[in-house]
Image 1 (cartoon, rainbow, N blue to C red):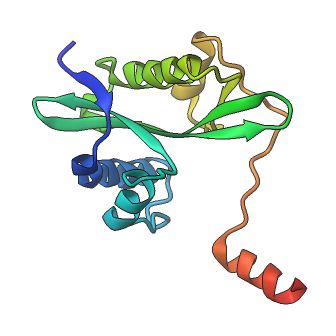
Image 2 (image 1 turned 120 degrees about the vertical axis):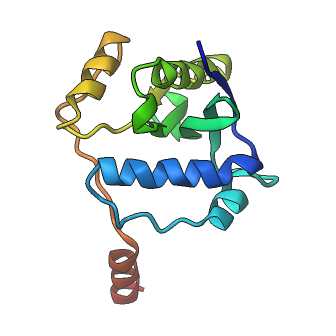
Image 3 (image 1 turned 180 degrees about the horizontal axis):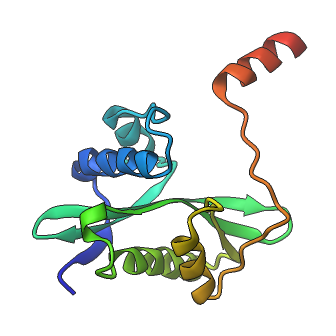
Length: 160
């Protein structure tokens, strides 16, 4: 292995944001990222972090990251949500994605979590096939639901 996996640090935020933006382009939503480096620092690298990260590093360069957080299921209890798993395009295929994925699963197992959940785009067959090969189940009956900030504001203003 030419890379190492380690927990993300505050000093990695610029590289993490670069990977988030690269992922947005890959997912065909290049203008959706609103986060700043300061947001990531405030939300992930202060006393009460809202998320955790693992990074893949090769020759002192961050080539991949996994961003995740703990949540609670009313059916299962303590769970982990894997928000994003990303390896820069030029470094795909060297095992960094699997190593990051494995690090998140190991973390969840060590924390006694009952489930790890994440979303995958229906056209991302490489990812779907990879996840299935590891024993993950892709749930075809469930749909992801989002309410954006503008619609949230509208709902609140109309109802409260």
